[in-house]
Image (cartoon, rainbow, N blue to C red; front, side):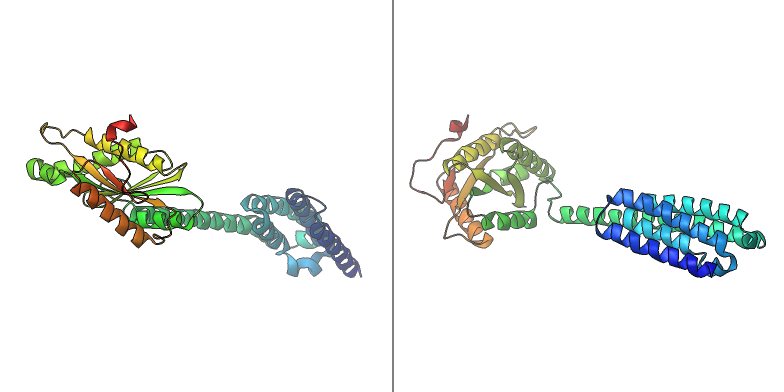
Length: 317
């Protein structure tokens, strides 16, 4: 009969606690703290007066601890484990049944204390491992889109960024394709190591001449791509182009004062109904860039009005 009464009390408590949780009577932290205290105290009290009848459910404090950890995190699992072990230890010291089986009582208390803590440590290790995997995956993804020589985007990264830009038809953007003039002469005169250093320097100079929101990529060889979004007008692209050409023309090749490089730019303005895919945009920018080369180099051509007068690079100053 006492056991039935005890089970009835615990059942009523469970129904009341389900009502509290389902109606959000307390905030989550308050519910967890109250649940840990009440649940572990109720279980310990049941073990105190239930004796051998409650021995089969000695694992209940462990279940409460792990459950609190799943809901609220590792801190609550450890807190429930400590409270449960302490309360059950007190119940074992006061209960005639548990006093008669001291080794079992010690084992129960140790299990309540150790198992949830071990589960919490394993959970922490799994969480750290997951974060490390995510970090490595992010690093690999970044590396796959970054040019190893210059540190800017590579062709894959540029194509991905360009595809995102083309989806926005409400913002004026410029897609620029730049080819260095005179780069082969630097390689021939100073060597490929000097050429690589020059490419790194050019990437830095271009980056410094652009806005923080603009993107730069090394498309391949001595070709660079530039994405400039959020322009107020198409003319802003020309202003940026002049700054880029100025930055390149100012580059000096150490030990070869007679060598100079310039740049030829092809500029496509988005949105444009004729250029809706990355391939079409890059093809058009490539043609415009070679138009600039044939026209004398160190200049640009744009898609929005190829006949209009061009600014000079000095106009960006």
